Length: 449
Image (tube, rainbow, N blue to C red):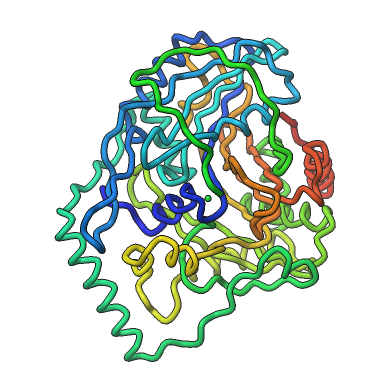
Protein backbone atom coordinates (compact mmCIF):
# COMPACT_ATOMS: atom_id res chain seq x y z
CA UNK A 1 0.00 0.00 0.00
CA UNK A 2 1.02 3.63 -0.34
CA UNK A 3 0.56 4.36 3.39
CA UNK A 4 3.07 3.31 6.04
CA UNK A 5 2.21 0.24 8.09
CA UNK A 6 2.71 -0.17 11.84
CA UNK A 7 6.02 -1.92 11.12
CA UNK A 8 7.16 0.82 8.74
CA UNK A 9 6.51 3.45 11.38
CA UNK A 10 8.44 1.59 14.07
CA UNK A 11 11.48 1.58 11.80
CA UNK A 12 10.87 5.22 10.88
CA UNK A 13 10.86 6.17 14.57
CA UNK A 14 14.06 4.23 15.05
CA UNK A 15 15.68 6.33 12.34
CA UNK A 16 14.66 9.41 14.33
CA UNK A 17 16.47 8.19 17.43
CA UNK A 18 13.82 6.05 19.12
CA UNK A 19 15.10 2.48 19.14
CA UNK A 20 17.92 0.32 17.80
CA UNK A 21 19.35 1.51 14.44
CA UNK A 22 18.87 -1.06 11.71
CA UNK A 23 19.45 -1.23 7.97
CA UNK A 24 19.16 -4.14 5.55
CA UNK A 25 22.07 -5.12 3.35
CA UNK A 26 22.71 -7.37 0.37
CA UNK A 27 26.31 -8.33 -0.43
CA UNK A 28 27.83 -9.72 -3.63
CA UNK A 29 31.43 -10.87 -3.83
CA UNK A 30 33.24 -11.56 -7.09
CA UNK A 31 36.67 -12.98 -7.88
CA UNK A 32 37.45 -10.20 -10.36
CA UNK A 33 36.86 -6.44 -10.61
CA UNK A 34 33.41 -5.30 -11.73
CA UNK A 35 33.41 -2.45 -14.23
CA UNK A 36 31.97 0.72 -12.62
CA UNK A 37 29.75 1.40 -15.64
CA UNK A 38 27.90 -1.88 -15.02
CA UNK A 39 27.26 -0.94 -11.40
CA UNK A 40 26.16 2.53 -12.46
CA UNK A 41 23.44 0.96 -14.62
CA UNK A 42 22.26 -1.15 -11.67
CA UNK A 43 22.23 2.02 -9.55
CA UNK A 44 20.09 3.77 -12.16
CA UNK A 45 17.55 0.94 -12.21
CA UNK A 46 17.38 0.86 -8.42
CA UNK A 47 16.87 4.62 -8.32
CA UNK A 48 13.85 4.39 -10.59
CA UNK A 49 12.54 1.23 -8.91
CA UNK A 50 10.54 0.62 -5.70
CA UNK A 51 13.36 1.75 -3.38
CA UNK A 52 13.17 5.21 -4.96
CA UNK A 53 10.71 6.70 -2.46
CA UNK A 54 10.55 8.67 0.77
CA UNK A 55 8.13 9.31 3.61
CA UNK A 56 5.78 12.31 3.54
CA UNK A 57 4.05 13.18 6.82
CA UNK A 58 0.35 14.14 6.78
CA UNK A 59 -1.11 17.33 8.20
CA UNK A 60 -4.34 15.67 9.37
CA UNK A 61 -4.14 14.07 12.86
CA UNK A 62 -4.67 10.32 12.60
CA UNK A 63 -3.77 10.01 8.93
CA UNK A 64 -0.80 7.77 8.30
CA UNK A 65 2.38 8.98 6.58
CA UNK A 66 2.51 8.08 2.89
CA UNK A 67 5.18 7.13 0.40
CA UNK A 68 6.20 9.54 -2.35
CA UNK A 69 8.43 8.85 -5.34
CA UNK A 70 11.98 10.12 -4.81
CA UNK A 71 14.54 9.39 -7.51
CA UNK A 72 17.27 11.42 -5.84
CA UNK A 73 19.93 9.01 -4.63
CA UNK A 74 23.35 8.90 -3.12
CA UNK A 75 25.92 8.54 -5.91
CA UNK A 76 27.25 5.09 -6.56
CA UNK A 77 30.59 5.03 -4.74
CA UNK A 78 33.67 2.92 -5.38
CA UNK A 79 36.51 2.41 -2.91
CA UNK A 80 39.38 2.25 -5.37
CA UNK A 81 42.22 1.59 -2.91
CA UNK A 82 41.98 -2.19 -2.35
CA UNK A 83 40.75 -3.22 1.08
CA UNK A 84 42.11 -6.36 2.80
CA UNK A 85 40.10 -9.48 2.06
CA UNK A 86 39.83 -10.10 5.80
CA UNK A 87 38.18 -6.68 6.27
CA UNK A 88 35.37 -6.84 3.72
CA UNK A 89 32.65 -7.01 6.38
CA UNK A 90 34.19 -4.12 8.32
CA UNK A 91 33.87 -2.06 5.15
CA UNK A 92 30.31 -3.27 4.57
CA UNK A 93 29.32 -2.39 8.15
CA UNK A 94 30.02 1.28 7.39
CA UNK A 95 27.70 1.54 4.40
CA UNK A 96 24.60 2.28 6.48
CA UNK A 97 25.62 5.79 7.54
CA UNK A 98 23.34 8.77 6.80
CA UNK A 99 20.42 6.83 5.32
CA UNK A 100 17.20 8.83 5.65
CA UNK A 101 13.85 7.30 4.61
CA UNK A 102 12.06 10.58 5.32
CA UNK A 103 14.16 13.26 3.66
CA UNK A 104 15.94 10.80 1.39
CA UNK A 105 17.91 9.01 0.19
CA UNK A 106 17.08 5.90 2.18
CA UNK A 107 19.43 3.54 0.33
CA UNK A 108 22.98 3.35 -1.03
CA UNK A 109 24.83 1.23 -3.62
CA UNK A 110 28.58 1.01 -3.06
CA UNK A 111 31.49 -1.20 -4.02
CA UNK A 112 35.07 -1.84 -2.95
CA UNK A 113 38.00 -3.46 -4.65
CA UNK A 114 39.64 -6.24 -2.63
CA UNK A 115 43.36 -6.94 -2.37
CA UNK A 116 42.79 -10.51 -3.62
CA UNK A 117 41.75 -9.08 -7.00
CA UNK A 118 38.02 -9.34 -6.40
CA UNK A 119 35.21 -6.92 -5.63
CA UNK A 120 32.51 -6.52 -2.97
CA UNK A 121 29.24 -4.80 -3.87
CA UNK A 122 26.81 -3.68 -1.15
CA UNK A 123 23.21 -2.51 -1.41
CA UNK A 124 22.16 -1.01 1.93
CA UNK A 125 18.74 0.43 2.72
CA UNK A 126 16.82 1.72 5.71
CA UNK A 127 14.58 -0.93 7.25
CA UNK A 128 11.70 1.55 6.90
CA UNK A 129 11.89 1.00 3.14
CA UNK A 130 12.04 -2.77 3.04
CA UNK A 131 12.50 -6.00 4.95
CA UNK A 132 14.92 -8.75 3.94
CA UNK A 133 12.65 -10.46 1.42
CA UNK A 134 11.66 -7.10 -0.06
CA UNK A 135 15.29 -6.14 -0.62
CA UNK A 136 15.86 -9.27 -2.71
CA UNK A 137 12.69 -8.51 -4.70
CA UNK A 138 13.92 -4.97 -5.40
CA UNK A 139 17.30 -6.24 -6.62
CA UNK A 140 15.72 -8.93 -8.80
CA UNK A 141 13.45 -6.27 -10.30
CA UNK A 142 16.45 -4.04 -11.09
CA UNK A 143 18.52 -6.85 -12.59
CA UNK A 144 15.88 -8.71 -14.62
CA UNK A 145 12.74 -6.58 -14.66
CA UNK A 146 10.79 -9.22 -12.71
CA UNK A 147 7.38 -7.60 -12.14
CA UNK A 148 6.25 -6.55 -8.67
CA UNK A 149 2.81 -5.97 -7.23
CA UNK A 150 1.46 -2.53 -8.04
CA UNK A 151 1.21 -0.28 -4.94
CA UNK A 152 -2.34 0.50 -3.88
CA UNK A 153 -3.42 4.08 -4.41
CA UNK A 154 -3.49 6.18 -1.25
CA UNK A 155 -6.75 7.66 0.00
CA UNK A 156 -6.83 11.33 0.94
CA UNK A 157 -5.49 12.25 4.37
CA UNK A 158 -9.04 13.00 5.57
CA UNK A 159 -10.33 9.61 4.43
CA UNK A 160 -7.36 7.78 5.90
CA UNK A 161 -7.71 9.61 9.23
CA UNK A 162 -11.42 8.74 9.47
CA UNK A 163 -10.70 5.07 8.79
CA UNK A 164 -7.81 4.91 11.25
CA UNK A 165 -9.78 6.54 14.08
CA UNK A 166 -12.75 4.27 13.37
CA UNK A 167 -10.48 1.20 13.55
CA UNK A 168 -8.76 2.29 16.74
CA UNK A 169 -11.83 3.51 18.61
CA UNK A 170 -14.03 0.63 17.51
CA UNK A 171 -11.43 -2.00 18.34
CA UNK A 172 -10.63 -0.43 21.70
CA UNK A 173 -14.32 -0.29 22.62
CA UNK A 174 -14.72 -3.98 21.81
CA UNK A 175 -11.68 -4.83 23.90
CA UNK A 176 -13.04 -2.83 26.85
CA UNK A 177 -16.40 -4.59 26.63
CA UNK A 178 -14.66 -7.96 26.65
CA UNK A 179 -12.34 -6.97 29.47
CA UNK A 180 -8.66 -6.23 28.84
CA UNK A 181 -6.39 -8.80 30.50
CA UNK A 182 -3.56 -7.62 32.76
CA UNK A 183 -0.69 -6.03 30.87
CA UNK A 184 2.00 -8.64 30.10
CA UNK A 185 5.44 -8.17 31.58
CA UNK A 186 7.60 -6.26 29.07
CA UNK A 187 10.62 -8.02 27.64
CA UNK A 188 13.51 -7.53 30.07
CA UNK A 189 16.47 -5.31 29.34
CA UNK A 190 19.93 -6.77 28.85
CA UNK A 191 20.78 -6.00 32.48
CA UNK A 192 17.72 -7.87 33.66
CA UNK A 193 18.64 -11.03 31.79
CA UNK A 194 22.24 -11.26 33.00
CA UNK A 195 21.16 -13.72 35.69
CA UNK A 196 17.84 -15.05 34.41
CA UNK A 197 16.04 -15.29 31.10
CA UNK A 198 12.33 -14.94 30.43
CA UNK A 199 10.34 -15.33 27.23
CA UNK A 200 7.53 -12.91 28.10
CA UNK A 201 6.37 -10.87 25.11
CA UNK A 202 6.64 -7.10 24.92
CA UNK A 203 3.36 -5.50 25.86
CA UNK A 204 2.10 -3.41 23.01
CA UNK A 205 3.44 -4.31 19.56
CA UNK A 206 3.41 -7.08 17.04
CA UNK A 207 6.56 -6.26 15.20
CA UNK A 208 10.32 -6.39 14.89
CA UNK A 209 12.69 -4.62 17.17
CA UNK A 210 12.81 -1.11 16.53
CA UNK A 211 16.70 3.02 15.60
CA UNK A 212 19.90 6.02 18.11
CA UNK A 213 20.07 9.42 16.60
CA UNK A 214 21.13 9.32 12.99
CA UNK A 215 24.28 11.17 12.01
CA UNK A 216 23.79 14.49 10.23
CA UNK A 217 23.33 13.98 6.54
CA UNK A 218 24.41 15.93 3.51
CA UNK A 219 22.22 16.70 0.55
CA UNK A 220 22.33 13.90 -2.04
CA UNK A 221 23.53 14.38 -5.56
CA UNK A 222 20.55 14.73 -7.90
CA UNK A 223 21.79 11.98 -10.19
CA UNK A 224 24.05 8.99 -9.82
CA UNK A 225 27.76 9.36 -10.40
CA UNK A 226 30.90 7.45 -9.59
CA UNK A 227 33.09 8.61 -6.73
CA UNK A 228 36.26 7.20 -5.28
CA UNK A 229 36.30 7.05 -1.48
CA UNK A 230 38.78 5.85 1.08
CA UNK A 231 38.05 3.28 3.77
CA UNK A 232 37.50 4.44 7.38
CA UNK A 233 37.70 2.54 10.67
CA UNK A 234 34.80 0.25 11.61
CA UNK A 235 32.77 0.35 14.81
CA UNK A 236 33.81 -1.86 17.72
CA UNK A 237 30.24 -2.29 19.07
CA UNK A 238 29.10 -5.00 16.64
CA UNK A 239 31.05 -7.74 14.91
CA UNK A 240 30.12 -9.64 11.76
CA UNK A 241 30.80 -12.97 10.10
CA UNK A 242 29.52 -14.80 7.03
CA UNK A 243 29.80 -18.56 6.58
CA UNK A 244 28.75 -20.67 3.60
CA UNK A 245 27.81 -24.36 3.87
CA UNK A 246 26.93 -26.77 1.02
CA UNK A 247 23.19 -27.41 0.79
CA UNK A 248 23.67 -31.17 0.52
CA UNK A 249 25.65 -31.37 3.76
CA UNK A 250 23.33 -29.04 5.70
CA UNK A 251 20.21 -30.90 4.60
CA UNK A 252 21.81 -34.25 5.41
CA UNK A 253 22.33 -33.16 9.02
CA UNK A 254 18.86 -31.61 9.26
CA UNK A 255 17.24 -34.88 8.16
CA UNK A 256 19.48 -37.02 10.37
CA UNK A 257 18.51 -34.98 13.44
CA UNK A 258 14.79 -35.01 12.65
CA UNK A 259 14.71 -31.31 11.91
CA UNK A 260 14.54 -28.99 8.95
CA UNK A 261 17.06 -26.64 7.39
CA UNK A 262 15.42 -23.83 9.39
CA UNK A 263 15.35 -25.58 12.79
CA UNK A 264 19.01 -26.57 12.37
CA UNK A 265 19.78 -22.89 11.74
CA UNK A 266 17.94 -21.85 14.93
CA UNK A 267 19.75 -24.54 16.93
CA UNK A 268 23.11 -23.33 15.58
CA UNK A 269 22.51 -19.72 16.68
CA UNK A 270 21.35 -20.83 20.14
CA UNK A 271 24.39 -23.09 20.59
CA UNK A 272 26.67 -20.21 19.64
CA UNK A 273 25.08 -17.96 22.25
CA UNK A 274 25.52 -20.55 24.99
CA UNK A 275 29.12 -21.10 23.94
CA UNK A 276 29.75 -17.35 24.22
CA UNK A 277 28.99 -17.54 27.94
CA UNK A 278 25.24 -16.82 28.06
CA UNK A 279 24.23 -17.66 31.64
CA UNK A 280 20.58 -18.62 31.25
CA UNK A 281 19.11 -22.11 31.02
CA UNK A 282 16.59 -20.87 28.44
CA UNK A 283 17.17 -18.71 25.36
CA UNK A 284 14.31 -16.63 23.97
CA UNK A 285 14.50 -16.53 20.17
CA UNK A 286 12.59 -14.14 17.93
CA UNK A 287 11.62 -15.48 14.51
CA UNK A 288 10.50 -13.10 11.74
CA UNK A 289 7.67 -14.40 9.55
CA UNK A 290 7.16 -13.29 5.94
CA UNK A 291 3.44 -12.49 5.59
CA UNK A 292 3.31 -11.21 1.99
CA UNK A 293 0.99 -12.93 -0.46
CA UNK A 294 2.38 -11.16 -3.52
CA UNK A 295 5.80 -9.77 -4.50
CA UNK A 296 5.80 -6.33 -2.91
CA UNK A 297 8.68 -4.16 -1.68
CA UNK A 298 7.70 -3.17 1.86
CA UNK A 299 7.82 -4.45 5.44
CA UNK A 300 5.35 -7.31 5.16
CA UNK A 301 6.35 -9.33 8.21
CA UNK A 302 5.38 -10.23 11.74
CA UNK A 303 7.25 -11.77 14.65
CA UNK A 304 6.90 -14.87 16.75
CA UNK A 305 9.10 -16.43 19.43
CA UNK A 306 10.18 -19.73 20.93
CA UNK A 307 11.94 -20.69 24.15
CA UNK A 308 15.02 -22.88 23.64
CA UNK A 309 16.49 -25.09 26.36
CA UNK A 310 19.73 -27.05 26.41
CA UNK A 311 17.72 -30.24 25.90
CA UNK A 312 16.32 -29.07 22.58
CA UNK A 313 17.34 -30.55 19.24
CA UNK A 314 16.57 -29.56 15.65
CA UNK A 315 13.64 -32.01 15.89
CA UNK A 316 12.07 -30.37 18.95
CA UNK A 317 12.75 -26.89 17.60
CA UNK A 318 10.99 -27.87 14.39
CA UNK A 319 7.80 -28.51 16.37
CA UNK A 320 8.21 -25.42 18.54
CA UNK A 321 8.67 -23.19 15.51
CA UNK A 322 5.69 -24.72 13.72
CA UNK A 323 3.48 -24.00 16.73
CA UNK A 324 4.90 -20.52 17.19
CA UNK A 325 4.14 -19.55 13.59
CA UNK A 326 0.45 -19.97 14.42
CA UNK A 327 0.69 -17.54 17.36
CA UNK A 328 2.21 -14.27 16.24
CA UNK A 329 3.17 -11.51 18.67
CA UNK A 330 0.28 -9.08 18.91
CA UNK A 331 -1.08 -6.20 20.95
CA UNK A 332 -2.79 -7.06 24.25
CA UNK A 333 -6.48 -7.50 24.81
CA UNK A 334 -7.40 -7.19 21.15
CA UNK A 335 -6.65 -3.44 21.11
CA UNK A 336 -5.76 -2.55 17.48
CA UNK A 337 -2.05 -2.14 16.90
CA UNK A 338 -2.99 0.84 14.70
CA UNK A 339 -3.17 2.75 18.00
CA UNK A 340 0.59 3.17 17.58
CA UNK A 341 -0.05 5.19 14.41
CA UNK A 342 -2.44 7.78 15.80
CA UNK A 343 -0.65 8.74 19.03
CA UNK A 344 2.48 10.93 19.33
CA UNK A 345 5.75 9.30 18.27
CA UNK A 346 7.39 9.32 21.69
CA UNK A 347 4.38 7.71 23.35
CA UNK A 348 4.19 5.12 20.57
CA UNK A 349 7.88 4.41 21.08
CA UNK A 350 7.43 3.88 24.81
CA UNK A 351 4.53 1.50 24.22
CA UNK A 352 6.40 -0.53 21.60
CA UNK A 353 9.89 -0.26 23.11
CA UNK A 354 11.80 -3.51 22.74
CA UNK A 355 9.06 -5.11 20.67
CA UNK A 356 10.32 -8.30 19.08
CA UNK A 357 13.69 -8.18 20.85
CA UNK A 358 14.74 -11.45 22.43
CA UNK A 359 18.11 -13.02 23.30
CA UNK A 360 18.71 -14.11 19.70
CA UNK A 361 17.21 -13.24 16.33
CA UNK A 362 16.93 -16.03 13.76
CA UNK A 363 15.83 -14.57 10.44
CA UNK A 364 15.31 -17.08 7.63
CA UNK A 365 15.17 -14.84 4.55
CA UNK A 366 14.75 -17.88 2.30
CA UNK A 367 15.78 -18.64 -1.26
CA UNK A 368 17.47 -15.84 -3.18
CA UNK A 369 16.66 -15.46 -6.90
CA UNK A 370 19.16 -16.86 -9.40
CA UNK A 371 19.57 -13.38 -10.86
CA UNK A 372 21.82 -12.61 -7.88
CA UNK A 373 24.32 -15.30 -8.89
CA UNK A 374 26.18 -12.90 -11.19
CA UNK A 375 26.75 -9.21 -11.75
CA UNK A 376 26.63 -8.95 -15.51
CA UNK A 377 29.36 -11.28 -16.84
CA UNK A 378 30.97 -11.66 -13.41
CA UNK A 379 29.95 -14.78 -11.43
CA UNK A 380 29.56 -14.21 -7.71
CA UNK A 381 31.74 -16.21 -5.36
CA UNK A 382 29.43 -15.34 -2.47
CA UNK A 383 26.03 -13.75 -1.87
CA UNK A 384 24.70 -12.77 1.56
CA UNK A 385 21.81 -10.84 3.11
CA UNK A 386 21.75 -9.44 6.62
CA UNK A 387 20.98 -6.45 8.85
CA UNK A 388 23.50 -3.96 10.24
CA UNK A 389 23.24 -1.36 13.01
CA UNK A 390 24.75 1.97 11.92
CA UNK A 391 25.38 4.31 14.82
CA UNK A 392 24.64 1.79 17.57
CA UNK A 393 26.16 3.02 20.83
CA UNK A 394 27.69 0.81 23.50
CA UNK A 395 25.47 2.37 26.16
CA UNK A 396 22.29 1.63 24.15
CA UNK A 397 22.69 -2.05 23.27
CA UNK A 398 19.41 -3.94 22.71
CA UNK A 399 18.44 -7.13 24.50
CA UNK A 400 19.39 -9.13 21.39
CA UNK A 401 22.94 -10.44 21.73
CA UNK A 402 23.33 -12.46 18.54
CA UNK A 403 21.51 -12.23 15.21
CA UNK A 404 21.61 -14.75 12.39
CA UNK A 405 20.35 -14.38 8.80
CA UNK A 406 19.85 -17.54 6.72
CA UNK A 407 19.65 -17.64 2.92
CA UNK A 408 19.99 -20.17 0.15
CA UNK A 409 21.21 -19.56 -3.38
CA UNK A 410 22.00 -22.37 -5.81
CA UNK A 411 23.92 -25.07 -3.89
CA UNK A 412 24.91 -23.00 -0.85
CA UNK A 413 23.34 -21.95 2.41
CA UNK A 414 24.74 -18.74 3.85
CA UNK A 415 24.62 -17.85 7.54
CA UNK A 416 25.31 -14.17 8.18
CA UNK A 417 26.06 -13.41 11.83
CA UNK A 418 26.02 -10.14 13.74
CA UNK A 419 27.09 -9.99 17.37
CA UNK A 420 25.64 -7.22 19.55
CA UNK A 421 27.48 -8.24 22.73
CA UNK A 422 31.00 -6.77 22.62
CA UNK A 423 31.77 -8.10 26.12
CA UNK A 424 31.14 -11.74 25.21
CA UNK A 425 32.27 -11.48 21.57
CA UNK A 426 35.02 -8.84 21.43
CA UNK A 427 36.15 -9.47 17.83
CA UNK A 428 35.03 -10.94 14.52
CA UNK A 429 37.59 -13.72 14.96
CA UNK A 430 35.75 -14.78 18.12
CA UNK A 431 32.49 -14.91 16.19
CA UNK A 432 34.05 -17.07 13.48
CA UNK A 433 35.50 -19.40 16.12
CA UNK A 434 32.07 -19.81 17.72
CA UNK A 435 30.51 -20.57 14.32
CA UNK A 436 33.24 -23.08 13.40
CA UNK A 437 32.83 -24.91 16.70
CA UNK A 438 29.03 -24.94 16.52
CA UNK A 439 29.10 -26.31 12.96
CA UNK A 440 31.67 -28.95 13.92
CA UNK A 441 29.32 -30.25 16.62
CA UNK A 442 27.00 -31.26 13.78
CA UNK A 443 29.84 -32.57 11.61
CA UNK A 444 29.68 -29.55 9.31
CA UNK A 445 32.35 -27.23 7.96
CA UNK A 446 31.83 -23.85 6.38
CA UNK A 447 33.70 -21.45 4.14
CA UNK A 448 34.36 -18.18 5.92
CA UNK A 449 34.21 -14.85 4.10
